[in-house]
Amino acid sequence: MRFARAALIAIFGLHSLCGLAAAQTSTSRMLVDVDGHKFNVRVFGTVKPDVPTVVFESGLGSPMDAWLSVPSDIAATTRTVVYERAGIGASEPGPEPRSLKQIVTELHALLTKIDVPPPYVLVGHSWGGPIIHSFAATYPKEIAGLVYEDPSDFTQTEADIVALWEKVGTKDGREGLRKMQEQIMATAPAGVRAEFRELDRLERGGFAELRAAGDQPDVPVVFLVAGKPQPLPPTATFPGDYDRFFQANLEQRLDHFSKLSQHASKGTLVHTSKSGHFIHSTEPELVVWAIQRVLSSAATHPELERFVGEYAIAPKVSMMIMRDGDRIFGQLTGQPAFQLYPESTTRFSLKVVDAQVEFDVDATGNVAGLVLVQNGRRLPGRKK
Image (cartoon, rainbow, N blue to C red):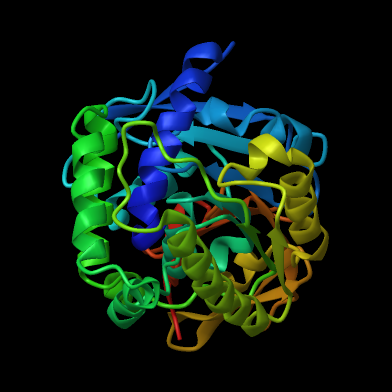
């Protein structure tokens, strides 16, 4: 979600989802502890060979049931993961402030904890859009594709925000919108308010922090943009002409997202006039189509590329790690190459001998070295 619209949508989303959350209850769930607080998680389907896992990131305040049938529909193709962020739904509160960096770090740790290795196709709705963008920029070698469903405009600058309000001719419209949002958010659950504070902080900085996080990797991407205005809550008083603001805001978002989709070698933008902000509710088939489109063109195991290279084990002994499609091979100096078989996201074994290779992966997913384990010995090697 983005602020000029973001805070607006944050409120509208919460308002629209209250009934949905009350009407639907998960029939099964996992409560998974990550760094001392539990996350509510559901996993659908099973791993399919050479098909990435699809991970869903909800909008502000949205329970995971808000995705309705989309995760289970995709589960016919591959494994899917839905969860509730810390302080949302049945997930326990996490450490504050609820910074974007903290949310991304927790999701990465959660996927590791439930043994869901990369590659991932990330699907982000609304505020989930900046989250998956930040995740992809932080862990680019783990991403196979991205689907943005009516996301916040994480490219929006301070100048863009000012220009938007000037175009609609509303004096102090930005502050008026913020006051309206603050009034409605005052009665929201604590976890939602904590995330809203982060959204407000990012908007006040013109989303510069998101741009500083880096670009997303060049992977297949689809942007779905809703063209129908989301109704205002009955108690909300919008500062100015809401319809005029929505149209100007929509035009700006389409311009920005069109440029992002064109920048990707496999990028698609779809503007739907049939749906408001919750496309997965009114047009679930469109969201399913977008995910399937990305899955069909996603590269096979892009995360394996990070292991490729030469690792110095001794002055005249190195291990070369090579990739062939969805397989990697190891070759010691003067010896033939043998396939390495995955035991976890960073540990591989050989079948020709009793040996393992453990890769040293840092917090951002980059590989700094490896350890060859054989005959009770551990031989470290640093990546050249």
